Length: 143
Ligand code: HEM
Image: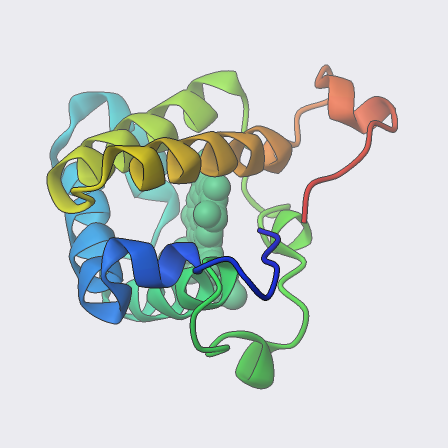
């Protein structure tokens, strides 16, 4: 997400690390329970603890807060990190269903929520790696 000197980061607008903690807990809580998310839940380890920590760190950096991901992990290269999981349209939709529910529960500011939703939708779309996806034909990539 871009940010100029005069702009307040999304991280600050939503309430910082406390809100991101709640968001990620709610997100994986939905993934754990929703029947439509079972397939993507099963791609993850039984213990969601470690990936929760990583997603919180990633989102901190991605929303313009403290850079907690790349000093430890290097460039996110998220799409590459997801290549070992086959992600198609239904998987993207299941991921977004969990995330949208979590956003609705934890991000109070409607404008910030809409912005996060739009950017996460782009990212989830980009994460698809099945052969028939248009971005595999060389479209511009989001960050
Ligand atoms: C579109 C559907 C998606 C699926 C099915 C999916 C699935 C997964 C799975 C299975 C893992 C590995 C978890 C583990 O090690 O137990 C993972 C890791 C991760 N995912 Fe996703 N993901 C999706 C989209 C996204 C999106 C949109 C984001 C960012 C907002 C994201 C951020 C991450 C991060 C930060 C990690 C940890 C990567 C690392 O180890 O550094 N994922 N994802």
